[in-house]
Image (tube, rainbow, N blue to C red):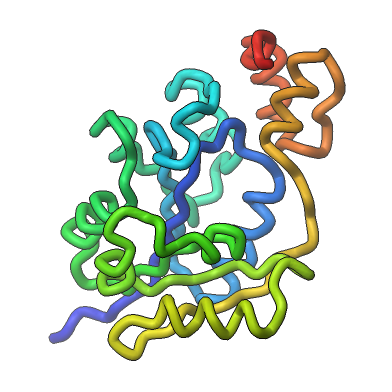
Length: 207
């Protein structure tokens, strides 16, 4: 009997720190694509943020665990951190395809990343191996820009899937800066993450 395919979402990032906007868009991602599971993949070092000051991976992973709590729909995969070095998405995708050979994999990015996706390492290989999903932030792209992105990121007659993202502007750099200045980060990150940041003084030396 042929195994029933299920939908699995993939979402990567530095999560420095995880914020409420991430969780809100992930909820929309699960809902729109009927995902059985969503795998969160923290970067070791992002090729686009190699100069960013980030806290140790163990803290970022702990904050992720605090943020998702007991929600069984989410799973954290530490592949990129264990692998070390610069994190390239294609390596992670190929690894996850061997881990989940019968599932449909959907990879979520924001519309800001979509504009620069052709700058990603082996970006066409990524598109050939998974289904790209783009979270469209309100008022960030016009119809012509969306059309051009669709044309560029359609590989083997497989265009990206677009989902609407809530209009919530939360900047990780703003969270880090506010934490370093002793200002409130309440309602920007989950409550348990807020307490963890304060307890471990994670961004006290952030500039």
